[in-house]
Length: 395
Image (cartoon, helix red, strand yellow):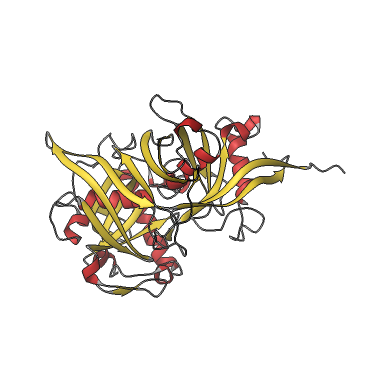
């Protein structure tokens, strides 16, 4: 009986923000996987170790959480005035599919450093010491991200003293600008797809909930924590082990996705797990983060918790942070009301791992809200580089 040998594919394993994933140059993928389709999806699933009914990713590079089951493909830019294309795949853990419907704001921080190290940026633009501005085309959603990547001695600087709650060790700061982040081309082409800052969202078996539904950064459904029986100070253990709560959140997500115009019916939500996100907010109060750090009410503007791929996130997704920052800047949204009901350009919110500061420039034009830019800082670090191996007959 013959067996297919393993093949090896050049790859880099990077942490970006509070996530990590396997990064590839498009040109390094096998020819069959260089274009979208079944072969590419099968390859990435095998790299990560999915689908895994044990939920462990023992036989792959994934970490069996939504934050660590990710792949990124980077290539020379396909659009003018950009340096690279960045394509992000969220690999399901127990189901056989890759969700391409959105971006990962955390891994966005690693795209610039990877592009520089992978030779995708003109060497003449890389100073001996200073900053490289990398213009990234986020191919999933058709948006621009500008990364400011620090360089020391002609190489990407990875070490530093920038601390990011949710990441154990400090590193070099990378500032990200999400340009015109509203609307992913779905839900009617508006930041608020229903036309309202707040809606009554009917969810059978749950009730009618006040909700702010927004398409910016990532499609997100915001709820008041108190309306669903929470305080906004919850950590992962309070929700992720509660099957009834998780079912409630998935029902909210599915019905919200229909209201936002993202899917035609609630059944379609099962094949679109990455988006939309569900988040809940509350006014500031003291709490203890997952690391044991005391977070004081006076140090934050509001509390925010969000679910990703069906589980409460251990910190905050970068794209959801963009949604929080934008919604907080617009008076009348649930996020803004939780933060004190005033227009602002910067907000600091408390999440399960600590706090995060994000800025957004929003304004009302002809009766509609638009956001021109959202800004936040992240960090990134190469964890391993070389080749990833998978059976040759797995894609």
